[in-house]
Amino acid sequence: MGKLDTFERVKEIGIIPAIRTANTHVAVRAAEAIRQGGIPVLEVSLAAKNGLEVLDAVATEHGRSMVIGAGTVVDGEGVRQAALSGAQFIVTPGFSAETVAKAKEFGLAIFAGALTPTEVQVATASGADAVKLFPCYASGGSRYLRALRGQYPATEFIASGGVGLENCGEYIRAGACAIGVGGEIADTDSLSVGDFRVFTVRAKRMFEAVRDARAFLEENSSLNVGEGR
Image 1 (spheres, rainbow, N blue to C red):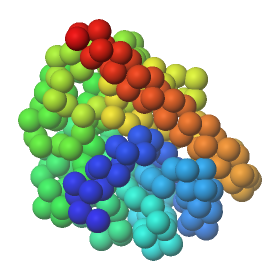
Image 2 (image 1 turned 180 degrees about the horizontal axis):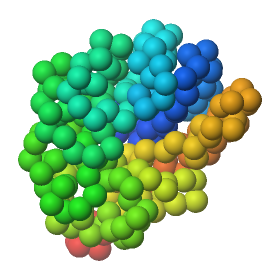
Image 3 (image 1 turned 30 degrees about the vertical axis):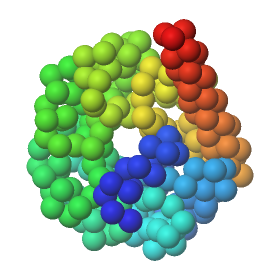
């Protein structure tokens, strides 16, 4: 799957669940549980011990049925190692021109972290495929995203940080092309005890919430067009 296809698939699903564990077996099981919940996308955090080994294991097991990416990537070397471990996309916590350039070199989609208008502008100009607005809850949540969308309508935003089932629809309606979630689907306690069934349930509920929010947008868009006539 090429870079553009990867990004389009991520946008189609609209949710990027992230897991952080040093246990390859747990990660593979968690990925399967999330996929069964209707979300064939997963971000594996490289901040965890053995992060690259975990990424490699998940990509090897699920790379054909899921879109697998590497998260918490902070430099070009991290991009290189993630690419060699099977990552199809890169997610950064903050902006780094080096990571964007290296992702382009390896033909990977990259979602660059940013928060302020200046950071958003720089990340967009760098050629990042999307801006991961992080941590979005710290600057006004969906209202802040809506304000940024007004100034940067051509930028694709992924809302991340404090996004959960109760507010994910707000971010979609505010203009996010996708949301990034961590413990809201795969929390540390459930990972540690191997309670994977809860991931399937949470994934399904969040997928439905995002689907409903998009349906709301489409319905209102149609109404607005009709009113304009």
